[in-house]
Length: 301
Image (cartoon, rainbow, N blue to C red; front, top):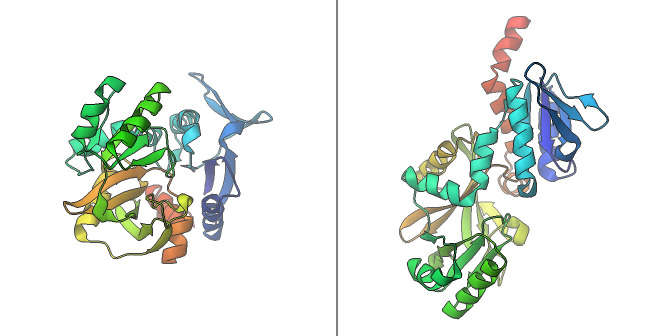
């Protein structure tokens, strides 16, 4: 097969591993820089062009790895590939709704999945009630546009919470206010889901003096044994958001496992390094399965 990797940086660990895994399985991998792609919308002959005027065609599948800052444009490109009949590992609609933190949480709740108590308001006039709504300080303030732990603040007192919320609001920023789960102790779980199965899981622990367990914020990762309830929660979360590939973040609380976030372009380095599992290879295998590649290959030969 010929598979396109739609991303921004070919040197990133995850992108290098996906290309390597695809080539090891005999496929042709083509890196497509999102910023270098552009679209021709035409009823008779829709196309995707690449910088220099080359037409991108002949792809059997595309793996979208869209960074948050490129969500709108990346999803537009992914939709264009879909309109051309190209299989995409994570659809444009699934990526878009997973990137909308508020909407994705509403979808998860609608489908009976537990999250930390969360508040959302438009006006600074409602800050006081917003704080009470989630159980008071300490609490977490999250920018809706944040990623990899950026734009997440722990407000340890009510006064600090009011200051952070009102400061963000003065900048016209959209934010969520979320209960702080003290018993999580600076740890969370990352469960990697591919095609409806949890293929690997790690526990991430925050660096000393830090409350965010993200690897990008200095957190460390180790193999963890997950419970059947945690496994079920991760699988249902990925299914709810229609993601074939997802990194599902969960914290352990006194109320049971709670969903933090579902990532449509989860990083591979932390989980592959900690578990020794070939996650990139599993992603390629998922494409082979969806396109019935093995059966077709056997028939042709």
